Length: 393
Image (cartoon, rainbow, N blue to C red):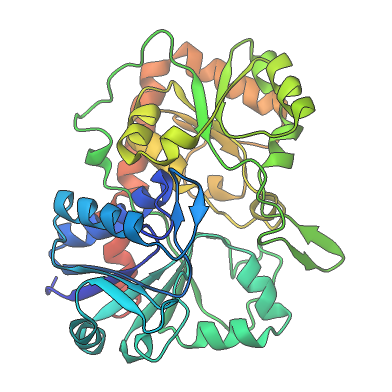
């Protein structure tokens, strides 16, 4: 493949929580390994978040310190910029604005990760802007509702990619109105999670774990055809809160449940609850937490499940890459991968119980299968080469 100049447009400085950082690093490192010259840019009007102080303000020092550290470790020094457009005049750290505009004009493509970047006069200089959607459902519904802002935003992209692998098929109920949504997955640099041909065995004290925001409903909830589709996992977890007790084991959830009654319900059903804040502010600790787990048990957001999107979690893909089996709520992904070993989709408590029983009876087999699924279906170089080829880059 000919070496290209590619920009990753993201938000891991402005939202420097561990899961978001890993999501972006996999794009950067994966594109580097394909031989491309990779730049990371945040050209944003949004105030940044500080995961240590929990503040959102115009102070971008934590954001730029994080990006500087990551650039040194993952070989994109001198190739990153944080531009704070909320300041007047706006300020940049990293590449200067004149240098950045030249990069916009002469790059081969830019990946707009999670649609994080709204258009401005500088971003409009990019000759091939590629939209990568990680949260399927909302944009498709807005298109069906003829939302002018959404339609205008999407049409400025040369290609539209989505983690919703069922979008545009009969399994997905929302019409696409002629937009060509191309399926993709979260790229994972698997050797950042497991260096060996086989994953090391977990300790005897290891548990099924997961990490999540508890209640995000309201942020991206959307009403469509007499039903409200929620952008939250909390109600889905509540539906299956009896799972560990039924499985006669303990599950651990790193989240912040505020309501006492909900906390007590989970504790009664053999959950161990831990706060996620330290994990969120430490991307290396986040990786270690996943590697030290027995596997992942998790639920999906209401939107992904009821719209049958075919979505799969980037965090769950990291568990797979660490050789940790995953039991996750079915969204329609099982027709593409998983099912028998290493990765289980569930819709009922009984399916969870059976998955735990199967993993317990042959952990090494399921661990190896998890790693093989990650390498076959999520390996960054495979995922990103396919994306670039289909985007015409």
